[in-house]
Length: 171
Image 1 (cartoon, rainbow, N blue to C red):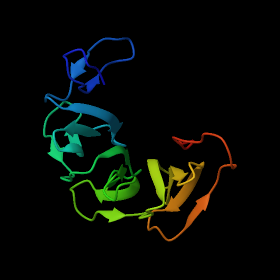
Image 2: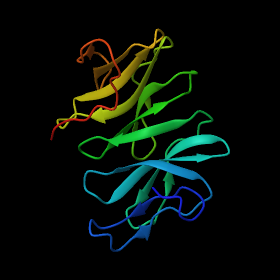
Image 3: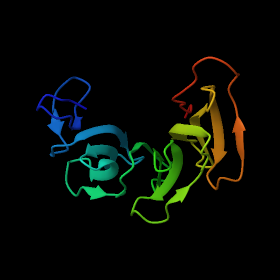
Image 4: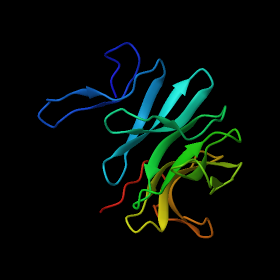
């Protein structure tokens, strides 16, 4: 993500610094890029006049597709290992909840729906069965938790206390 053009846009670049290519072209604040497992697409949040929505675009910048059309901010997309779904957080209920949506925009579900807590930074497990995330209670206590992708099992995996956020799985 770079603001070199005056607005935050998504770019790709090789490790040696060559072949810098702008992928998004709009007047929004584009952020939170996440590569699809096969490397052909990028999911990202785009913050415009009506808030942040999720988009998918081909890696070459073609075929941008808006996944969400909500007035609430939606961000932090993370692809399922098979590339069929995206987990993200949304502020629809006044706090952050975790959602899953199919990459064609269908089948959206709210995984957490917890008015007294905020969940963010979803990260799919390599086997696709779990999502790790940051949980913050009303008392501002933070933890890393896991939730099954069907929402039926939820558990804390971090030790209590301190700042614990942005989980990542070892491949």
